[in-house]
Image 1 (tube, helix red, strand yellow):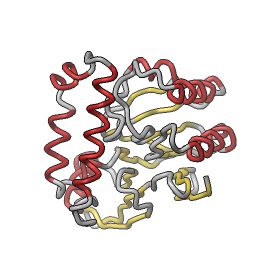
Image 2 (cartoon, one colour; image 1 turned 45 degrees about the vertical axis):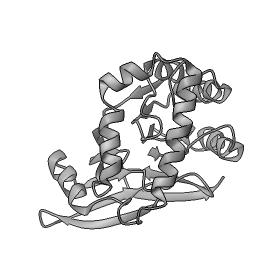
Image 3 (tube, rainbow, N blue to C red; image 1 turned 60 degrees about the vertical axis):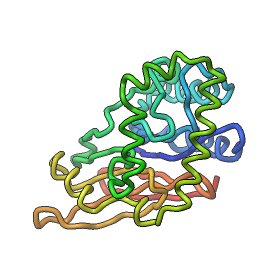
Image 4 (tube, one colour; image 1 turned 90 degrees about the vertical axis):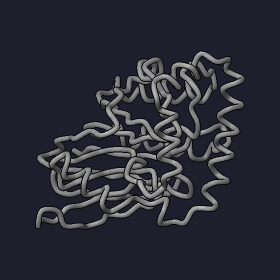
Length: 240
């Protein structure tokens, strides 16, 4: 058996091929797993659990079916869907996890997170993150009329895309010091995250011991999963 990890699907109604690939993955692969962990950005944008977008209900039903089949599903918020709340979690059968969670997977202690907190060189984003996720800001935003939130979300996404064009690849990648600090703080030698869209298995040294940072890719041209078993940690890619 194995435990599977995915991230950065960015599901939306304008990318039906990615949605189809995800549903195929659930029915073909995830159904055989011990558990499925979604490490953020399952959706391209999330402006509240009250958004009646049909895709959201469809995905919730498929995830709920996975749980009913005996495969638990866990979710860590990403930078696109950090407003996803308990209402959707109940509808989908997912369990929401803290932004940093340590798992014991077949004897390996693994730190899982979305990955955006590791990109400390991107100071503009980190400042926005602190403001956007502040409980007071969320409390003010969510009661706004849905059409207002959709408009705000669209404008913020356009602004983010524009700002990212001016940033170097290095700035938008993880900071090596932040990676080591997170691993040391949590007492682990394995880390799995998404966000950067740069799938790879990185080997580093921590306390004179080998450590590993495993990065998930985005589901754009291909799907990306990390499969952890008692024998190995594998980064797998496949067509969607």
